[in-house]
Length: 373
Ligand code: HEM
Image 1 (cartoon, protein in one colour):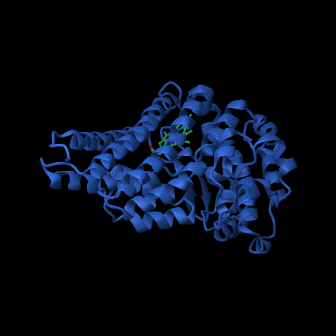
Image 2 (cartoon, helix red, strand yellow):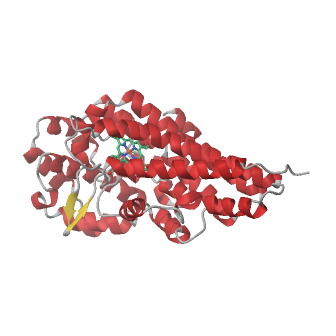
Image 3 (cartoon, helix red, strand yellow):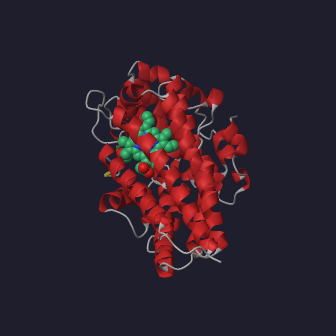
């Protein structure tokens, strides 16, 4: 157990079974603990026959999947996913090798309300740390990268509530700044996560040792991306803060593709808020309406809180861009695109958008005004 597990808000009592992390981690409906302990060895030997036999051997009766709880179905998808990614890494399209996996993956996708393959949440948050940890390589750096992603899940789930609240408030309301401050506190987990990654995971290990396990696979004629950290839903925070009405076509297209891999509640959040007015737009309109006259203290406080939240988002993105640029540098990379389906250039675009919004808010807030009486 880590500090982040201890300080995580009490998700385990949540009504959404996808948030019952301890229950999902503990579940082993396929009896995969032992076969998957051997996975790093099979991968080291590129033993495709053993990987194929392991996938075939773990498959449950598809009809029985409907009777499983959602946590059990998520755990089963987690475990089958480790074999999908491993087979693909060694050049074998997994469903061509084991066609009987198709009805099982389809049933698990239906039961969980998610795509018919594993996502980054299966690979990290829903993956038990310690002796039962599912890993492709068994290397310490892989465990660290999994931990880096685990660190942010509870905070981003909590941010869903604070950002929902933000969308309902106006910047004159003192609650607007409070919602922003809470979100800023939650988003700091992203900065801690990327600092931990930079300290513990070398870009070369990621590029050469891990990235090949995150390739897309074909399921029922459609290609599904592997478990990419890009599926971490930071976009949920962007959405109501600035993205819903101040985006860019490249980021929109990336989100359209990424949202497919999200939890049902997150997709619903996106549908509810994508046509809304962002916090940045609401605040800029309020500040320009005040013109040169005095700024109400609640509005000034909202501006400071919004600028601070955008600064934290920018800090994550600048540090993340640094490691991504190294891992996808020409001399290191094996693939042009990230495992989330986009090139490093997208990260530059999103970093610039975040920075531009921060600058806009700071400038608008700093325009000389008569202080309120
Ligand atoms: C060696 C470590 C990492 C590398 C090389 C890397 C690389 C990339 C790349 C190339 C993208 C572009 C989209 C794509 O994947 O196709 C991306 C997106 C993204 N990554 Fe990472 N990443 C790393 C670690 C992390 C970690 C630890 C997190 C968070 C816990 C994270 C969160 C994100 C997010 C949220 C995006 C979407 C774009 C954004 O919001 O700025 N990444 N990453």
